[in-house]
Image (cartoon, rainbow, N blue to C red; front, top):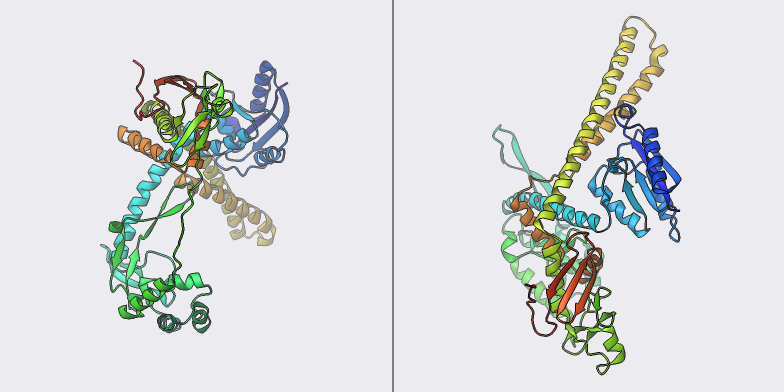
Amino acid sequence: MTKIAIYARVSTEGQAEEEVPINGQIDECRKFAAEKGWEVTEVFTDAGFSGRTDDRPSFRRMIDIIKSSPNHKPFDIILCWRSNRLFRSVEHRLAYARIFKRHSIRFVAMHEPEFEGSSAMFMETVLAAADELYVSQVSEDTLRGLKQIAMAGYSTGGKAATGYRNVRKVAGLKPNGEPIMRTGWEIDPDYAPRVKKAFEMCANGSSGPEIIKATGVVTSPSSLVSLLRNRAYLGERIYNVMKQVDGKTRRRANTKPEDIIRKENAHEAIISPELFDKVQAVLERKRPHMQGRVQNSKRIYLLTGLLWCKEHQALYIGKTNATLNYYVCGAKHKLGDKISVCRTVKKEIIEEFILRNLQTHIFTDKRIRAGLEHLAKEKVKNKQEDDRERKEILAKIKQVEVELKRFYDAIAAGVSPDNLAQPIEERTAQKNKLSLKLAEIDRQREIDLKIPDITDAMISSIKNKITEMLAASPEEIKALLPQFIEKIELDGNITNISYVVSDEQNVACYWRPQGDSNPRSPP
């Protein structure tokens, strides 16, 4: 029998009267489970906790039970009255859906269609693309402002380079006459001479350890090299040399030269250009030069486990020779050309073909728009619940303030403060707790993903972001494909792609395994 866990929640005591109370949620879930023939083995309840946070006692206990049972499932299904009882944001829902999936546990909301498997993966991809789009827009605005600050010769944040120290300066006046303050660099009298000495010692042939011991400007040879290559000591302000890419791994990549900000005479120089050039020549002579043949990186075959030969019902496997990467039918590899006549398939061509089909048939405008509309509805529901929570909290704060006023009025009328000290302390603590809850709601609303109006241009931008995501590292793409593709079956010159998503299941295209990089669609 299928074993299930029921989860029920209300945000506050007052909301229990407006919404389905916890006991009502549990009763409905039990009835639903009985109709399905499921056995209820666990019931988790959180009363007075917002679904916006995952820091809820029973919710955390449920997750801990799941994670602490790696070899067996504590239950097969988590059942809720509605999904917003378990999660208040799509972000949380998708994050924990991955945990449930790793442990083969389904999540079912009684009054909603299931949102898991390929659908969850699709929504997660759209969400990530929308989030990246919004963040990139904010980042562009922020970067534009920081570039202007750097072009004016001021610091864009962080510590000053060794040998300098931060100092606040007036950079101008606001329309109301208030000063605009910016951070600049000035010579640090303690460390600037040490930095200059480090450059001079390097130019005269001293070793790294000798320079570090004599100056103490850094603690390691690699840090010393970075210091000696820093053009800031010539008085230059350099900004935006590196940029962050790939929101998941936060890798850093070089910025285009035209996007780099270089401002001369931004601050006082510590060394002369002649000394700097002499040190660069010394460092270049000491730089180790790679010799010999560079090893080829390991080849990742994206379609391993997905690509099938229909004739022999065998998986294709990846093979590499001196010049080519290709897929070969497992039967051909095992039995030889005389027994199996299956053609080999060029790796790059078929992988590009499959990724293009994935974009064409899964990440369509219609699907992306539907996904964004779902996210927008989730945000509206979250705002409505936030408004209810805020209204109740504000009412309670007002009630506590009335009670505190009565106590203070009583003291003013002659009642001993000692007699009212304890109730005043209790009400004050209650007010502080309520104020913290209110502040947390407001803070979370500020950092929520802000989805702009859904337009054709936005959908086009998200499709471009998804294209970038499908051009990620081979390891990431290989892990992603099984979430959307069930099987790719080669039948002569025809490729049948079976998608995991319920509709558009069988997408057939003619495929020419050898030489044709533009497969034809069937008539």
